[in-house]
Image (cartoon, rainbow, N blue to C red; front, top):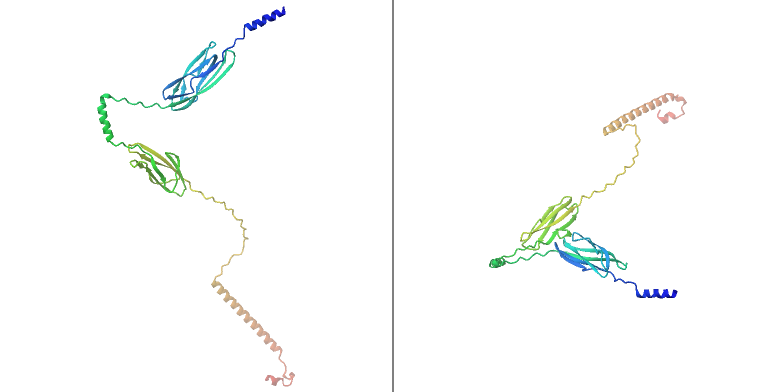
Length: 320
């Protein structure tokens, strides 16, 4: 009995094999688009044997935008392809990317993740060429002949040279230059020459400088009247301040007070003092002489002796 059941099951498996589904796929019709400003183009998204959704976005909406940010397959049958279109609008000149991200699954349960970028280049819209009027062919021919006879005026408004005497300008771009000078520089001389001899240059010459920024404008007028302005900013540095070192006062010893009054002696005072001193010396000398005289006189009185007491011959020898 058991063998019989085994044989039956084997036959069932062989007669009814497992169902296999076709592989799923997702695709985009293009990898790049070129659009004129104000125009639009479309691309297609296709999903085969796949159910899912796609998100669509622009990397820079100021350059290009998309008509929708979402696309979905909806319910599809096996072995079928579902397609949809997305419109891209050109807005401004430039380049950006359209990002497409798909998230879905196949009928056999396999997950599909799909990502693709489409490069979008937006270009300027060409100027339409006017259609000639057949009725005015003769007039146009005459006008063309007259125009050919007239000299076309130049629109060249570029500078051939731009200099500041004694200095090198720093170029920021074609129309902007800078220069920095020391504080002692009070004036500069700007010279410029046009590329076209028929163009006029205004704004050259000597300029007085103030401390700080000094804007100077050079204008080039082409023969046809079109103008080009070049800006120069001359910066005069501020006056350099000298650093003043603080002076440390030296400690001075306080002189001792002298209570004696200073006496100013003149030559007249010296002469007067000398005469007084001389008189004093004379008086002292007179007094000393007087004292000596008195002493001698007193001594002479005490020395009176009798001649008889003198030795013999004393008087003769002394003349007495």
